[in-house]
Image 1 (cartoon, each protein chain N blue to C red):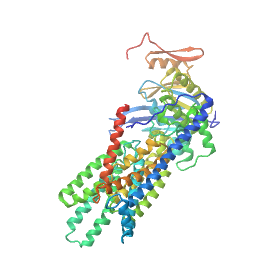
Image 2: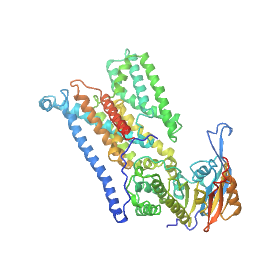
Image 3: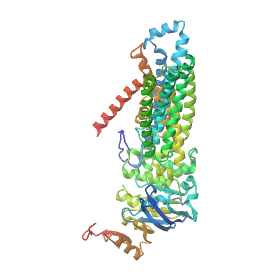
Length: 273
Length: 365
């Protein structure tokens, strides 16, 4: 496991407002997806959780610099993210899309090697260090067994692991993963959680997760509701657990089993949605 | 996103000791696929060029070739007519194949073609305007001036029209950042410019005949100057396109992912649009709107030897050259001594190919 830096950066969102729409109607016709979100992401693993439509993926895209906020800003170690150019940003922040919408016929290795683009630029030639980073990333995401298969011949879960390897190959100190466990079977979900825990030593890892039990394996959770931060804290924090149960309308109960926190679905007393 | 069927071969999991061998075999398999296609394309190009030299007004026949060579005008016929025309057809095909591969990569859609962004409509309108201008103003002009205008003026007009069409599309779409906006603008502009050129042909019916010739595409008038121009254009554009091929590879992951990899999407896509429209404009100015080559060439390459875009771009150019050579020879030989417009041949062949694809897709679905 390579640690890209001894001091992984702190990512900070300051008073973010994000809306979709053309913004022509003075905010009137625009739906605000994030309403004044401020939060801090320390080195280690933070999982963003919340109901559907809470703004989780939007927040991650803003953190990645892919979506300019309407107001507010993202800072990395105090420096404005907007001041970095695209390649600098790509070297420091790796982002994994929610759905691997992939076209074309690249092989697994060619795809993972794209993770080196922020270092090489369009015209650079990959060197030994780049190849080594690609090898390591494929090994970490467990897709080195089929590096010459084509992406469109893989299953959804396999493809997800390749795309994860692509994100790892850039060796960025900040890793933003949007729903990395989608399409994965339970063994690979567990493997991904373990990988995230390992990566968190020496990186700032932020994941959006739907599966609450998996998210509870993170160092910290950030709970979003309707575009606002509802609560943030470690799973051991009783206040956070209560907030989770409330926000998810008591459809789950968070209990400790064998030393880990899990979200139990309350099948007998499901509230009407 | 539309998907056309591809052969999918599931590889069963293999025990670890065999995996390495399998891996090497798979990599070698991809290389072999590409080498084989390259071999076929080079063979096709050679045969096509030969066939182009041999095919004359008597069709495809060795006997007439011998009499052509023995005649006094051998040099004129072979050196000044057939050779540039044949080479020119190959170059038009190569430019359109390159344009098609760029368009399909840029729009991440296997049905994109080089004419999408208003290049065809712009060139069409410009040609009609020049034709109408020439016939309306022809009364005052000397015959040579009118002829010059028709020869050189039409090429210039088509080139400027194609570039102008794409520029308008880019303006309407406010840059090349948003795919949907870009495609929609291209469609809207094609309709508008098409209507304008229809209007001109109503006012000046003489322009209609010239317009029709342009729309059908033709390789009959390609001379050495066209060959030189297109060869220079192809070298430059293919070189630049290959340098940007990694951007097209990154775009296969989706636009956001490409942006997260440090690509400045707006700038990179603008460069790609300019390369695409440059290739299209050069080809269209020399040979009119030859249909389907730009759509089918990249398809055939991806079907038989898929790979990264550096390979796709180069192989699609080669494939386009072979396809248009083939179509050119057919257009000359089929009803010799008459000639079919080459665009009609490519449209029929391309249409049949798409029908075949659809039919296969229907059966496999």
